[in-house]
Image (tube, rainbow, N blue to C red):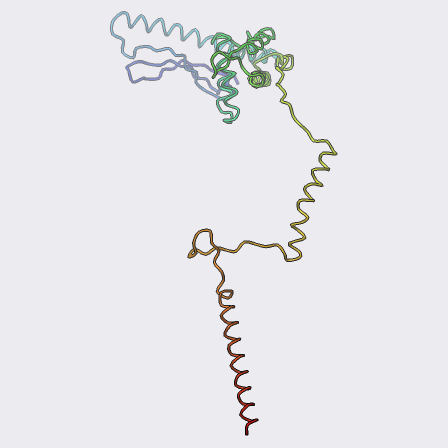
Length: 290
């Protein structure tokens, strides 16, 4: 079905009319990939022109809008006779006009916070290296290699007078290469520049490792340290500190009541024993006299 394109007007609050194109049936937006029926031209005319200047402005603006409508309709008519390869080429030409800086910023704004700082640092260096209006069609392998050299010579973002750490350079350039790979997968670049770029190496930190003999010796020492404690626990000789009571003085253990009463009970038992012995002795003495 052929797509019809009509020029329409939308009233605004300031007494003007906004011009836009109405497509039926809806067309696919080459940037977002979604179906749409409207394309606003960012052109405005006076709803009730006053004077010759406003009327002339309306006439000139409508002429430009009509030219745009004709071009859109002509392109849609030709698309019906283009091959798939020609359509893909036309779509690529439209995507290649997108600004690379804008695409980079849109790509990392939703990244997790841990990665966002790295992409943000690389974005800061990218804005210092190239103009804001650079487009995808201007991105070449030579341009990417120049940016790599720029990152290697870049100063620290937080410490004045110091250069970037080697690990930071590695992380920033890796974020840049990730965006290039994403742009290639989405059709903004014709070739995979990420695969042709040499990465910035990471600075390896020195790491120490134990040998097998050292591991065995550490294991033996640990077992020897644990063995006396284990044997004392089994034999019941392991002594535990006395529990403290809130009513006692700090630093002094409170003796249980049973242990405090043991001496008293022992003394009372001894006195009872001696009293019984005296009674038996006296009874025997009196029996002998009789």
